[in-house]
Image (tube, rainbow, N blue to C red; front, side, top):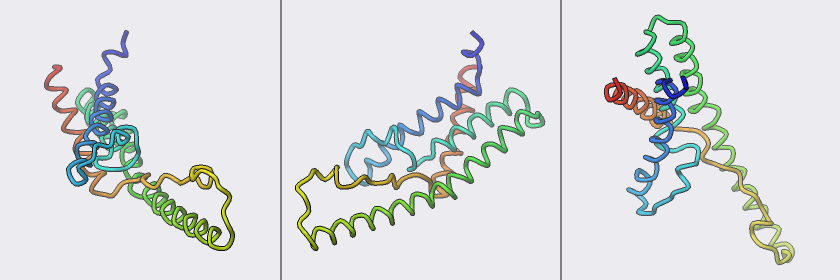
Length: 158
């Protein structure tokens, strides 16, 4: 099957999994807590989106050259993804933080005004995901990770 020989595809997938896995020990260092949910979460250091798009762009450049049309498509796609990660998605995360605080404050007000029915906390509210986007440094290191991993994989395979 040809898909098993698609180096750009496998480089990008490897970069995603590696970047997601690295988030766990990087978060462990300051907190001393192992949080395995980081493997499937968005946001954080390094950006797996950036690692993926730079890995695929690097692999395409290796296989087809930097003057190829497919490299141009991959590079522009990568720039858009990384710009979005530091822009729209990061600000959506900020908005989620503010909205979660408003919900918390509202729930506290309601409980002080009248007795809140005895319900489980999870039934009372549903929090929005706050860690959506990336700081520019997270995108930079995700991108750098994608390039380095792809160059190493290419050297090992070829």
